[in-house]
Length: 166
Image (cartoon, rainbow, N blue to C red; front, side):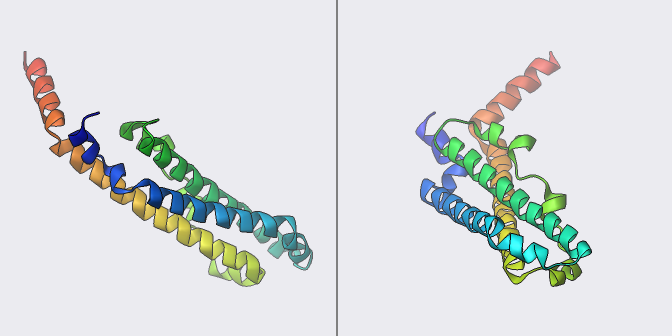
């Protein structure tokens, strides 16, 4: 990869320090969540009535889903930064932030039934997921713009167009 190609990579705008900081923040929240799920959550769950217990289980899974998606996203970005994965691979649907329907869902009424510590984890994981979703959209936009503007991309498109015309 040439220096000019490297300078035009959207992921380079997000350096390893930013990636590491974001990844560490996600991992710290995952560790806090794990501690809660292994200790206090059992006590909190017992104190709830049956409908709230079901909601409690669902919302614990929602925290886990958000964190899994965010951590996976950061690992993909780190692989791109390390040269282990191409940008095009990183933007493949299975490497993007997923499960938006589950991760962005929020029911205020259900939250009112749940213990404070779980609602904090839900809010923090939601904010983290939204932040990464925004970042993913920005990087995707930059990637698409750079693909269209990059001189090699234009040359490749011209060659293809010429071959198709013949």
